[in-house]
Length: 291
Image (cartoon, rainbow, N blue to C red; front, side, top):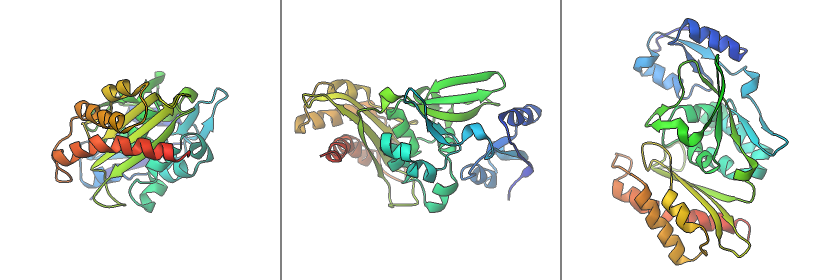
């Protein structure tokens, strides 16, 4: 069933790089909720493969805040750890809300936010939220450290900007990208749990003192091959009052910015309908939380 030729438990990033240098086909494994499925299905990259356990790497653990207010999430943080973390709950609660909808309890206790991102799926529940927070990914390799905006990390369906020998270590969100914002995440699926999204949407909004929209950020999952922001809708919304006409126009611009498809989970027509109405619902839900 599993064509695994060896297993190594790494205790440092240097150990990971050493093993991968000796065997470029080796794969890292954390929670295993994606890797073991691919190995069981004997995907091409997972035939006669060594696995490298990375759960003991200290640099990849914990959720912290720097002196400048930057939030830093270790890539090994499980969905449950992210959901329940006090810093997440206080400053970026929409992320906790999103990861609480991943799979079932078993998956949330072992699956990691780093794996969710590196898998490259447009349906990943953490991705749209991290897009709206303008998250930066800290990626390590033998050559050093690079910081990649999450919007540049996704290259296509299941394809991310992670070269052989590179490891996602931390996810960072600057204070300016969460302070003063309200957010809401919606996941449409056939079931309320243990399911993949037919369509998902994260929405962040910041209001001006005159109660017009100072900034709006919208990101959809499963509306294109990768998670996708809504540039036309976001540009239109700035300076607008919250009313039916504004919300309807935002929905129209979102439809223009997306590229949905037919699948066995949902039709293109259904997804296009959701694209036009979910942002308005998210905006109203986010604002309602502070009323």
